[in-house]
Length: 60
Image 1 (tube, rainbow, N blue to C red):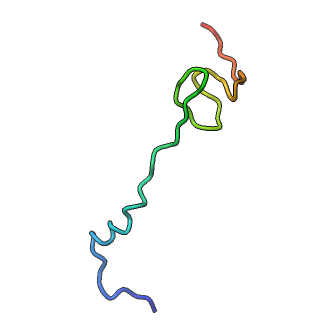
Image 2 (spheres, rainbow, N blue to C red):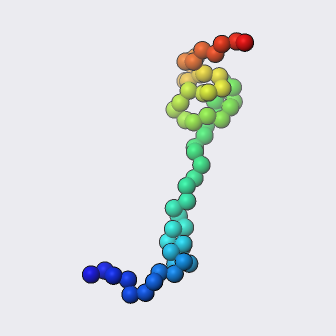
Image 3 (cartoon, helix red, strand yellow):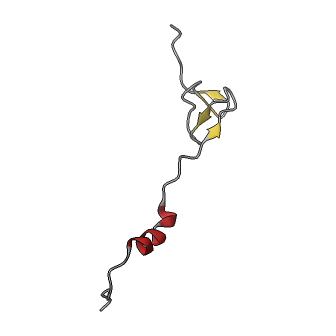
């Protein structure tokens, strides 16, 4: 059976996990207001998605 003969050192363990770090979210620039937003989603700043107003914001 596949049982380790020696304890895996911290360095070897960390080298193996070197590529497992999480990256930040991919962001795209909104063509209407130039704010950064998540791709394929409505812009939270202006409410536009693909050149159409999807969300209505109330003026205060």
